[in-house]
Amino acid sequence: MLLEATGIIMQFGAFRAVNGANLTVTEGGITGLIGPNGAGKSTFFNCVAGDLVPTAGTIRFKGQDVTRATPEQHARLGMARTFQVPVTFEDMTVAENVMVGAFLRHGHRHAARRAADEILGFCGLDTLAGSRAGSLGTPGRKRLEIARALATEPQLLLLDEALAGLTPAEVRLAIDLVRKIQRRGITIVIVEHIMEVILSLTGHAVVFHQGQVIAEGPPRQVVDDPGVIAAYLGGSMKRVRTPTP
Amino acid sequence: MNINRIATILGLLVIALWPLLVHDVFYQRVGALVLLAAISASAWNLIGGYGGQVSVGHVVYFGAGAYASLIVFTRWGWPPLAGAPIGVAVSLALAALVGTPTFRLRGHYFSMATIAAAELVRILASNWEVTGAAVGLMGPPVPRDIWDFSFTSPVPYHYLFLAVLLALLWLTWLMQRSRMGFYLAAIRGGDRAARSLGVPVLRYKLYALLLSAGFTSLAGTLYAVMVGFVDPESGLGILLSVKMVIIAALGGAGTLFGPLVGAVILVPLEEATNAIFGGGGTGITFIVYGAIILFVARFQPGGMAVIWRSLTARTQASRGKNRAA
Image (tube, one colour):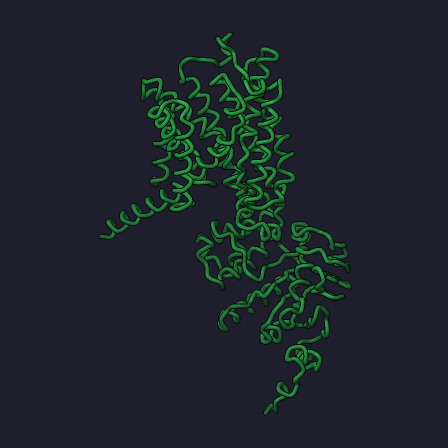
């Protein structure tokens, strides 16, 4: 078991954003976290990534308890993440951005640069290596975030809406990249809104609703679950079940 | 050879030969003061520019260096330069003490906390007999031997300061290219993203502050050695902290030569206003600082470095055009 989160509760004042959610991730797959807005996916995700310390529950990564570990300890252990809104180091070049990640495993500048170059090539950013990162548009920034996270040489990559805000063509390119990352042997957890992405990409989908996991399993099966449809559409199942030719 | 390299070499050459180019002692003295200001601003630049943590309390480290050198003289009769390691040690301890809690604050709150810490130290020094209280401390009235490093000519100071400045710039250059330089740039770009990439943010801020504080303290010692006098205003006054920030911002914070360029502009300007409007014209100095803050904040937050970059980009572009024609 690569990642095991059990009984996660996250309380903000009187509001309980995550209410006893569980998640198990086995090595090698792509797990999708889905759910309507405000379902608690992102909060749960931030607990797993170490940005938030949950009010209750435990998170184990590679058998180690990381519930209270800092984000930098998570990175060191081999868990990397991207942000919903990309945080680009705008004054640095694209290659330098990736080198920041590479410096985690490579102490020397030349070694970090070599590692970064390999990642840039892998992500299709090699032609932009020398450009100022601030000059990139949204798709470039999202791709750069992934590259930077990969440069820390993770075993588990957490993608927070890495495909949101992209055009359909860009989404297809991004899906290809995520598949390539999986083939590299990196396990992926992805939070996503776009159903098409979840259906085509993930082997295992986990549905959040009101801070709890209401369904999980193969994505095709999950989207047909009446409870899931109700959660998404507020109960009117009929409109979804329009006759299919 | 590119235009940046030519400008750097020419500039450094003029600075190195300055005391030989001008014979007037006033101008020679201004040259030495430029270098001294460049040392403290370059030291500030390590944490304020590269680390993006705008400390407005760096005068505590400057004061520690200045006071340490004159305390070892008045107490034990040592040459003032011998106070340098003590000043550095005290500064490192102060930096760890001030930095550990204040680095948890962000932006303006961090700056305000550093001001508060510096003012606290100034008030303590104004009332402590060891630091000479409000009267201050004097250096050796006449040089006893070469180790007192006390000269009437500014030229020896010029070369002592130049050596320290070059050492500091060389270290900064090495730092900029190392993991630490990248990590500081990442911290400046965004704490949260930096941490997610495994950057131990607090630790690297502290490293930068320690390096910065050590060299600022050295600048304080050099000041005391040259001037031979320090009191709470000249050694711990808030104006000195502000000056470091302004010089670095004017030249370009977070760039290698920015603080030196800023010092080359600001110090002669300040000396000129003092000369024209009479000595002790601190009122005028404040007005000059205010004008510079306005100018930098309104027109060019990146300082002269950005202006320079756009200028050279234009000349290179026009050169390219000529070649094509």
